[in-house]
Figure 1: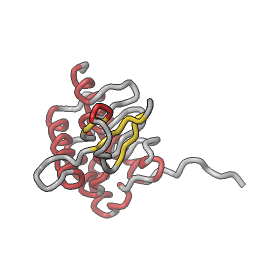
Figure 2: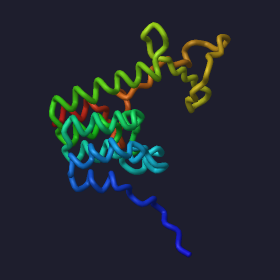
Figure 3: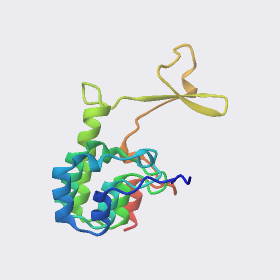
Length: 172
């Protein structure tokens, strides 16, 4: 018996690839679970339905329907093409779509990654030897020269060529 390596595409993905946008919106209203990312999308191997819609030139109403159906689509990062902002910049989406996606990312990060005063939850990286490692707390006894205090947002993620979304926008 042969085993398939990839899950079959959902009907929603077929509609997106065929650019039947009105049917995509109707499908999301009746079957919102179709927008839920499968395992390969969550791991960053396959593009999400939101990324496919952005690459296919979908309008804002289609993107709104996708994000309403599955809010975590905005935070998926593909290991090669980067975040949804990378895709929007590379595929020359309109300024309206870029602003919409930026606003959605800010709202997502405020809800999931910010602490009460509007600051991002910091990631502390302590350098031990030659390789950094992320730690939950800082060893107060360690010297400060080998510590890095940073914030991990969707705006400073890199694609496979080391470019942030701003780099992609600059080269449009």
